[in-house]
Image 1 (cartoon, rainbow, N blue to C red):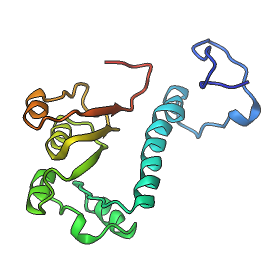
Image 2: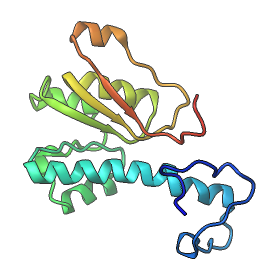
Image 3: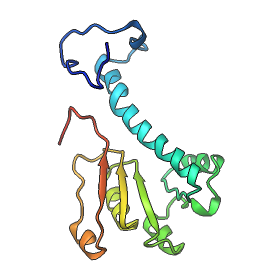
Image 4: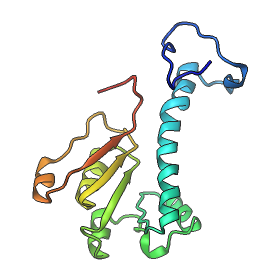
Length: 167
């Protein structure tokens, strides 16, 4: 029996699954919370890791920005050159401008999903570039049509959200 891909029915109150598909929940984890990890978390994870494999394979440049130094340190340990890591306290838009990267960023992976990070992504992606929205912190994030028109950008927003909750 396959669940989720190519087979409907998992909204049923009860379902039979192969023992290999069942895992024990750690103490204190509610079933509703654990259920999210099997879909929303893995969807985002696979979206990121597949793109990371492509990035590594083609030797593309990666620019990293975060508010937490430990995340930037982790990027450095993973091989991102220090000059491609935006320092804490500097906006990603400033970093892109100061490093002459305007109009050169093909894809933005947006992991937070706040209004600010959504706007940052739209401001730094090149015309015709892609924004992969992974984070869903704010309930509503919009596409600024003035940016799209001004830059003649066709944004391809790939939104990874729990398919049971469409806002």
